[in-house]
Length: 346
Length: 248
Image (tube, rainbow over all chains, first blue to last red; front, top):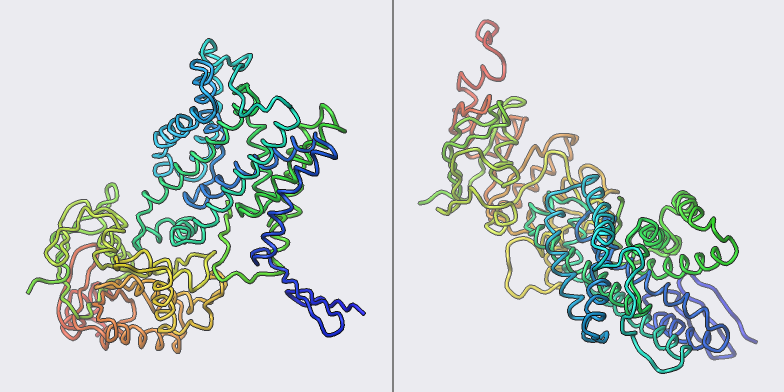
């Protein structure tokens, strides 16, 4: 008969003289493959079962893809940035304005969106050297709001009140359902690319230097880390990654309005993703992204107009109930990493 | 022979308060220089100025003949300066091994050093201070003595020429303090570092130091061998007060 045995780190299955083992460890190669395969099969399944879910999946992937660079930025600069959506605005408006003015497609606008976010991030990067703690939070919080005001003041350029329309769509196969499916896969690819890159960075020597800066900036400086360089690189790189998401939004919806992304409500969602995932843990960001996106879908469907009020309440409740996040639940039971996971306590 | 560090007319002011007033001294290669003074004399400020944590108001600091007065702390770390703190400041969320690994990667530039090489290095320094068995424990969970040792390992892992030690005895019991002193002596022997040692406990410096510099109110009082310094009238007055002769 089949015998199953649950050990501390694996499930052992025996049948006669044969034996199979399944290691319960997310970084074990087979489990990683299973998760990746699941996320790649899901859009196809949704395509046949309920095409609307692909939309939810796309927003889940994109939330995760915003939260992961934010996690990198938080660790690399040792500060909590409350305004990453500013760079969504910069990337999105660059792509949208160029596409409308010159009729450029997404591949042509991408380098310009990247360039503009890099320049904007570089201009504001002195913040990570000059401002600390509450001042940094306030300044980064204000940036997107100021940008939102600018879109209303120069409304003939940015169309702050109506939004920009007529952007060349990301792709056009002629069938809306097929478009959704392919964009769903594209968002999954972006999310996994970010996950892979940021995981590699955090596991490398630069990740270790960032962890040291995250823990104690002065000591990190005195052991020979060029903290200003590391902080600025982390800030600019992460901001650029967020800017690419702005480009994606602009071409995905064929329209772009600052009022959708720049206000605090959008930031709150990203914060929820980051916190539910588990304090700037990048694998947690994926879990958090899917959690928040599906929660949002359910709230909109069943709660209606009260939905924006429920979001912060859920965030607060989860901060109390799960201080380490969803991924932290797993981490606590199976803490076997050789290099420690970097914790953000802000 | 050029001295390892030459401090000339170092002044540090905080607003109106003169914390360090016109202090000049030299540190020679291979020696242990003791640095004493009553509470608030400006000992830690001198170390902070030398390691670049605080910019000097005026004066000049030279290392091997190179002016390092305006260098940033990380540049001084590349030159070969390392320090420990009076109150240990570990990286609380990193394990003992990774704390040392970070400074092994970040310290003085070593050519073609891979991540694994740095890991071997870090393991060696951790073993040297006797924390190998605690290598996978988060630094915030270590005891006070272990934190002191971790700081020493972290400082040594940057391969310094000169190590600033700030009050190694504070907060340790006699047995631990003895171990710590022994460890510093071994570090000097094995890694060839020069040591600049701030300490309150005179007995330690009497044995360990080759020379002693005494300061009070930010100004240098005396400099010389330990015997000369402890018998210096100014030094005794600084510690015991002006009327000490009446009770002697």
